[in-house]
Length: 188
Image (cartoon, rainbow, N blue to C red; front, side, top):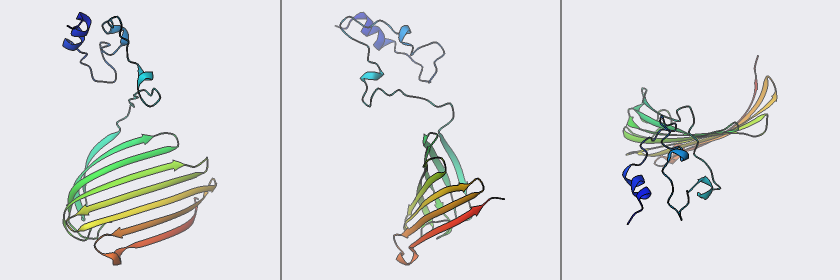
């Protein structure tokens, strides 16, 4: 037989799922007492060193319609990580390719799925490493584009930018390409 406190928790659980509850539903002091012989599970009991869930004030995901002369579709994106030094964004598109070989796409028209990962990392005060990986697949093969870029600020108006970009087409090897660039940018 269940103790009355446990039965009450099961019959009347807190209903608020928002990060901030209006009536204090998730406040420890407002919860029913724990039966003797049991203890409350806290964040220090969870795996991963006692981390706490933090809900940011800004929206971390989005859904948007996309359209161009090459493809149409919908995109779902998620800002996976945002710190002072690191930024990671994931996006997944579904749609229809109207024009083959356009905007880093596959070799034919038809339904497509497209994914993208963007990563930016500060390397000290004056350098930043960025990577963008994009993959598109459909009935006419798969296409991958990966860009890696390093920007180093030499002076306030002078930046050295170097990068490597590769493109791979599963069905058309002659379309594979690798480019390396080194640029010195001066801002007036």
